[in-house]
Length: 196
Length: 178
Image (cartoon, rainbow over all chains, first blue to last red):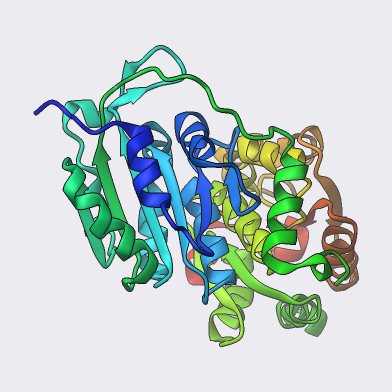
């Protein structure tokens, strides 16, 4: 089945009226996707550390149980940290959502096929790991409900969204890691964060 | 076993508590067995079992983004699993506190532990992690306290290597009996 959804439309739909949502994005296309929607201090776009986006989300979700945390990452990035689905499934944080934008490709390196192109089902893997809510999404109509679930449903939630494999213009966030960390903490915790 | 050898996991746990550590990521290790039990029993502390030590680097980074202090417990073999993720710690200047029980070092009985154990201090140093080494039970707690201050006070990545001489496992049989 050929995917029809477009990744930037998905990011736009999920981040619409995001309120206080804390967002971690995996390196590469998903970091550009959240930045295309709008760069904000409560985005933490990764430029490296492939395979660990979901774990950063877990540490953040456990530290901030009253906030909702969204990890938006790609299929290649998620496959590199597949064990983290088990780790999250054991902890079962109610405020964490992991959403994979699945184009079945390594988009930054020449569009080589990932395991999902051969049928590896990440949503089923997440379900088997103990995620409370898991979905595989192919239709635009399902995005509004997913957005609501990210904000309100008891998690952990996992969604795998099949999208077209397309090369899009780069929309780059700041790349200074120290800056990204500090602006995030200041926005979330206030200036006091760095005085404790 | 001397009493001081017996008591260090409890004292190390007290040190983590005093340093304000509220999340602890770990891959089980015989040398950290007692400390892991203490962390799991503490309702104010979230002990997170990991499927690989590399996950712990992400956990600690996320915790810091959320205003919480995290410590990682692992064996020296696990340090090798963390290398690329330590690049994120350095680039973002995340504080990081790693408590590493050493293998492949003093009196090792498993040759497969030796390469990573011997390389652990230089691998950490190459990735910008400050290395403290505790070679006696008495040294562990003051050095852990100093490591926590350096990590969270000065935003450094710090690893405290706890010598195999302190942990003192000398055979597969002894390890299995713990």
